[in-house]
Amino acid sequence: MREKAIYILGLLGAIALVANMYNIFLVLPDEANQGAIYRIIFFHVPAAIIAFTFFFVALICSVAFLAFKTFKADAIAVAATEVGVMFATINLVTGSIWGRNIWGIWWTWDYRITSMFVCVLLYLGYLIMRPAITEPTQRATLAAVLSIFAFADVPIVWFSIRWWRTQHPGPVLETGGLPHNMAMALLYNFLALLAIGTALVLVRLRSEHVQREIESLRRLALVEA
Amino acid sequence: MVEARNFMFLFYGLTAAWLIVIGYIFYLVQRDRKLSKELGRLRNLVGDGERTER
Image 1 (cartoon, rainbow over the protein chains, first blue to last red):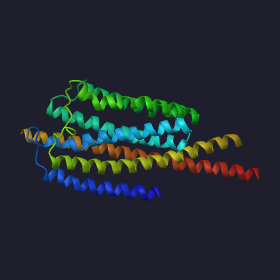
Image 2: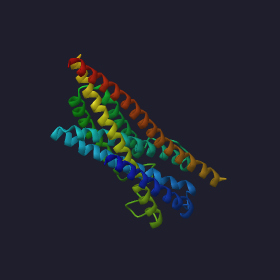
Image 3: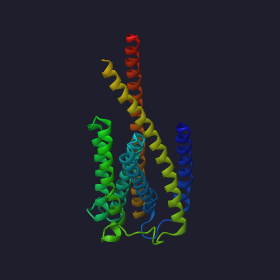
Image 4: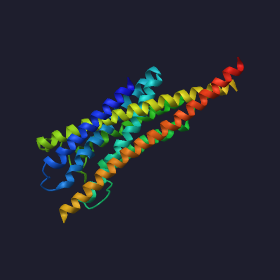
């Protein structure tokens, strides 16, 4: 069942993405001020929203683990976090390249960019910490606490452009600053990338289950020895 | 000229995004392969142990 879901989601995401590429590159006009480079928005913004979606899934699963001690929740949390970090990295890298073209700089320590960078570091810390703890319950408990703590940064990233003056542009999605055809292309790209991201989470979840089986077999081998 | 530079940066951005995705998929495949090998090895080890006990 999971295998089927992986293939269906991956295929749907890939087809939608290819169809959307045609729209983005050949149908939509260039933006009046930025020219062609604005098309990075179709990857930069969905990547951030998908990363936050997966971090939110990790938060819910971490709370579920602390409440019910179910290792399935811990497995989903780590899978969602890893894929979330990948999307957050895409967001930072594409943003940096976009900034170099528009602002003339690769990087600036403004509130939005710095808080996103801190977000990636926090979740990277989560992923680096896990293999360092061998006892499964202790590892899952500490990871859950760290995941809840790390999620506190997500609203700061989201609202930073409203709370403070930043080099990063202000909100365009909620204010309707984006023309309808561009907004729809953004939505379709978000859905396509979300499908691919979910397929990746399922693949990562499968390898987490194998990892757990290995750990239990190792313990069994130790007992037998 | 500005337009050409614009397209170059668009190309860099999209290439970087896809390289990160492809890199991550490659990492997942490698990890899966390593884990499957380890799982097979441990199953054999534990299975052999059980057979010896019997």
